[in-house]
Length: 259
Image 1 (cartoon, rainbow, N blue to C red):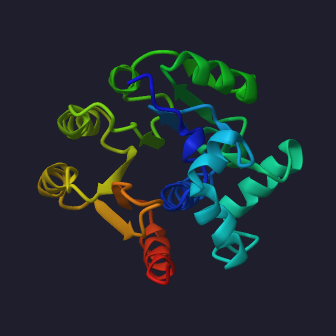
Image 2 (cartoon, rainbow, N blue to C red):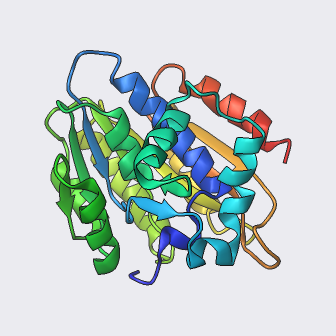
């Protein structure tokens, strides 16, 4: 569980699907002059260097953000593009924000951010880049999700984004979502999951679909990052999807289909 480090994968095609949908949902939430709670169960380090040894070793960023920026997937006024531009203004052109910094950029001072990360080095890096203005927790993210819900304020979003290295995640996460939804029925609950050549995710997705028929499930497919790589796509499950997010999902589907 503590071996995963997202620096090897930051800015890949899966990140782009997840972060585009996340940014659009957060932008929707701040349209009303009411405070928002944002909860993230697996935050990572928050900021990544796409020229690092880790990023260049896998080449996933080159196939992801570096490629699609040249293809103009995101207009300048897209909330993800704006977040990336703002982070690069501060940290340099090879920077890429993880979801904590995307959320911090979009949300306001009146909103509350709860960021969880168990890995000690990743937690320390996250603490350094977020500074004040976010509540950080070094503990199990799924346990904290239960402890924090329902949050105050009640309007808000929870992002669940585990590494999926722990096989029990495929059964524990759907159980958690049902429990959180009962406690926080107005919250947007977003889950990212990999689409694997082994199809290990299928029973979980079928269970989520059966238990939450009104949720949005968006999946995209793309070529494996390298020979033998098991991830061939990316999925987002969104409970209580905000208005307009389905249109962004359809737009992304068309873009991914061109790869």
